[in-house]
Image (cartoon, rainbow, N blue to C red; front, top):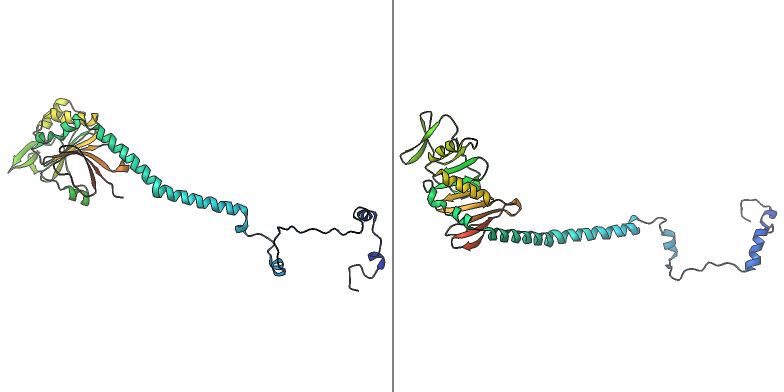
Length: 282
């Protein structure tokens, strides 16, 4: 007999069952309780039983399966949003903005765009609607080189400078007189005037530029009333820059007989008047 842990004592392995176990026989008799196997249970081979891992892999957990599905749905939703929905929303907002700008075109815009004959003394003229009075002039202006090489170096002239004495023309070119010194203005040059001065002093200095001060005041007022950033006039072509959000690019009301430029979108408003949108390159 093999060793059973209690030696060779027969009284140990032949002793009678105690009363609690006797009641087992009273209930079930001599029958043996057999655990029935579930019919749906997997039929495993001996090798499968022996090699079956005691713990489930994290990939087999139900929580992990749910998390996987959620992540896949999230990625799919993001792909649909950035691939289709975002573009649709952008185009919808852009169309609404463009239609609103087109509907806002009025007689004030036409009046501003037709001011090219009033500043024909200068081939290039620009007036900003900001707080300080700022005008830019020039003999010529290459817009393509302006955007490709960056903003040009302006010669800034402050008419409040005590050394500034006035303007004069020398050989057809405009010169400024500062402390009895003549300086030729050949490229782009900007004039700034302190708005804190009295109107009489400001108008006197504007007249030195051979421009009607009342015209300048009217232009600035209409720019502000119509939420416009600036008026540019160049070689009988005029454009009004519209204050807008940077998301959609730059919008302009344009007066020209030719409406074509790469990277721009034109919408005809009436004869020689267009709405122009310049896309921002990121």
